[in-house]
Length: 335
Image 1 (spheres, helix red, strand yellow):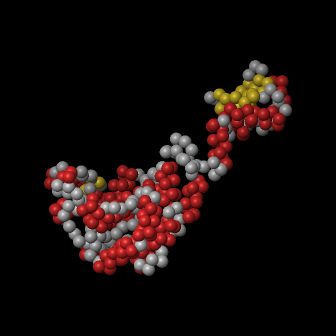
Image 2 (cartoon, rainbow, N blue to C red):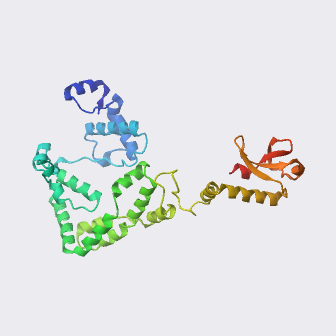
Image 3 (cartoon, helix red, strand yellow):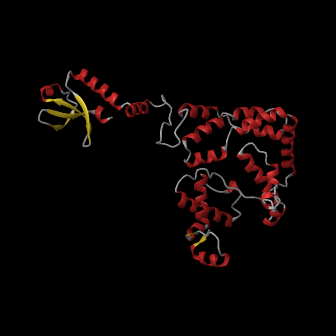
């Protein structure tokens, strides 16, 4: 991603790369800071320790500008910015990663990489985290010891290990589901899966709490109580929601009386109209009253001229025929 005025030179120098050009203002430092502060909902970037890296700030601001132009909305999942400290990780170039066969074997289809050998994670989130750890190995001995302590704890307690694997495997890809929630692109069935995933948070926290392992206890204490969110999701959504909004029922019956009424009309419209017609006959005493529909003013009530004197004053006359008149009222307009 480069400024428009240098895009041609970059293409000539680097050849066949996907290059996107933006206006010069997107790379201006002050504009980038303002855009980042707006996105992160803060007054300054001091708390993120990135102000000492103006080029990085400009790049981040330009990326946000690009996302705003291409995505238009749904950037709420971007809520933080941080710097990767070179001193905290073992940096490996692409040749080292390839020669170590960390992610891909050099033996072709018959070969097995390191990640293929050790990835026994029970969720997509675990597999992604493992790949991240392998790509950027940490150098902090305390963090490494904390990881080893957690691994040793579960090796010593296979029953707890089996139970927590069962719970985690039932959460699905919670990270990606939450990101779709933040961008407003989640589908009804994904929302239902989110509820099922959240129902497993409490058992996972209980399995991790009181272990005596500092890192694991700290992890458990940071897990929020999600029972209320789980309750709202399960009570609001239908047990078997449609795949997309507008393709079937999504909200459960009884959540919204108006929605229930509209569903009843859509599925039993003829019966609803007959019931409404009978109520109007009983209320007005007009036995020959009938409710019909046309494309001009929608649903209407037709009354013969012989019963015209019984028409309530709140009815609005819309059409006069030879032997009858047609009216509308708030009830017919609400259908």
